[in-house]
Amino acid sequence: MRISVIGCGYLGAVHAACMAKLGHEVVGIDLDERKIRELSAGRAPFFEPELEELLLDVQGTGRLKFSSDISEASDASVHFICVGTPQKKGENAADLRFVDAAVNSLLPHISAHDVVVGKSTVPVGTAARLAEVVTNHEPEAHLVWNPEFLREGHAVSDTLHPDRFVYGVADGSEDHPAVAILDSLYAVPLSEGTPRLVADLPTAELVKTAANSFLATKISFINAMAELCEAAGADVTRLADAIGLDDRIGRKFLQAGIGFGGGCLPKDIRAFMARAGELGADQALTFLREVDAINMRRRTRVVELTRELCGDGLLGKRITVLGAAFKPESDDVRDSPALSIAAQLQLQGAVVTVTDPKAIDNAAKRFPELQYDHDTESALANAHAVLLLTEWKEYRDLDPHYLRNIVSSPRVLDGRNVLDAAKWRAAGWHYRGLGRP
Ligand code: UDX
Image (cartoon, rainbow, N blue to C red; front, side):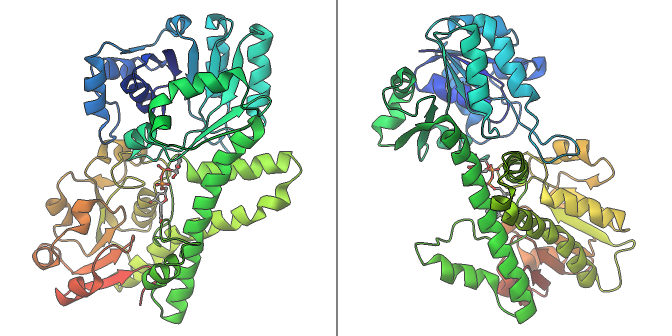
């Protein structure tokens, strides 16, 4: 099938490459000329495991091209909307400017029977509004909502082998003509047994925000337990292991630490609350305010703990922060808890050096006042305290015996509870986890 993908960020670039891998003819479209140049040369404009190999692989087939010219979408019959929906400045609500602009710019290039497929995360009600925009322009075209659940760092495998497909169509029926079109688009993963659910438009939109809210709630739940464990002298990691063995609960997303960040969970729960308010259902989501508050408290707690760890205040203390990305295997620093903590420590008089295997360039653009070092060992040299804030494998594997001789004082704060506390203590370190004795 001939496909256009509007928006080539973390979602769209991966989606375009994966659709070409599945055998379709794809054009990826973005206004950002730099992105288009990079992608056309087979280079990923951001770090995402497996993406660059995939780009080179499919570009060899001639099925994938990138352009900044929206008229290239005219040849396609399925158009994916993959642009961002960031948080509005000074408000909780989502900013839909890019989604609206993408659909409006696409209109002149839509023909009868084309399908416009929304993938961006939008407030419930957006799809019905956009469906009207599309059918007012071309009554024989369809707009459907097909939310994307990919995780950064696993985006390629999540797109090629998703755990489910959700198709939101106007009448919520299996017989809607767009259902068969999406089925043939996704024929390969469907043949591998991926479940697919057909729903009406608002349900499909809500599936995405509900899923992200649930994940955020799970993380804040375990972080609330971490607060309690600290007060009671208990260990939240053992607690999570034990409750996680109940398969109604499950151990995934029960990793207590500095909390969630990134371009999705924080802004999605806020946009969800804002939308619930507009719909007169704000009471239903007041718990998400608490989820957000618990999450933000983690950052302040780490600053306090670092002050305690340093003994006599933060002023002039050399602190090394391991990790700047919001999670490992990503260079994304949007709402990164690690960077937010690093910046707060710096503001309180510490001298903070941040290192990260992939995210330093992005971090330096956001927080130019921090010091950065690409080399882990030199970043750690003479540190008064070390904070592990993003759990990259290379940081989890650090040798505490060796490092002890590099730092000025062997004090470590394990912001993700991933280090072996006994091993670090045995090597002479003063170890602090979060929610652990
Ligand atoms: C999330 C959803 O998982 C994905 O389905 C959706 O499509 C987009 O939003 P992503 O933002 O890539 O994906 O990251 P995710 O793996 O969900 O992690 C989000 C944040 O939560 C990270 O900062 C991570 O460090 C943190 N986290 C995750 C925890 O603090 N504890 C956990 O147990 C799990």
